[in-house]
Length: 219
Picture 1: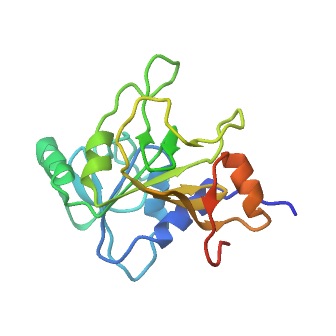
Picture 2: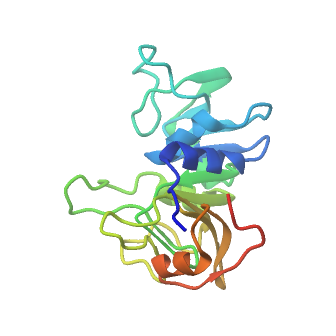
Picture 3: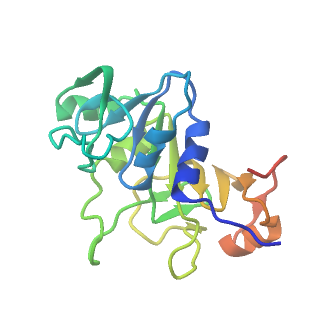
């Protein structure tokens, strides 16, 4: 059988589906910001940005951007009724104090036990510094990663041990990728779901690591 990868929007929908009502959530730079556009209706999710915003809404419509209202990735955002601005230091105190339920981050690598590597230096177009990722990864009650499973060279970003500088140790709970959703546990990877047409053995071959089976492992 053949399989189709999740698009970035489909992946954002998949992540949004698991965010619970009443959650305080930080969405990292890059793909994670798309999650804001797919939060289920009928629930309240409070979005936080480390530059000092609480209560962000979806991305503004084209032509309605206000570049004085941006997230930590310098992208224009909207503010929902009741939203607020506050000092950068207060924002990091919120992150470090365990007041966020979920953070969704991008990554270069995630180990099977949940180690996170999502920054590096020395290469063209590299993320220049770790920013608030260390604070988010350790401070949030749950850290989720949203990324393509493979690099452009076809190598798995889910690895036995990270080779990039670590952002956090054993902090990632779930990996949401274009091919599968995985849980990181002290015993290794566990499958939550995967795209139709992809066999479990094929997924293990792509990742290069054993993945414990799950009941109902399709999206």
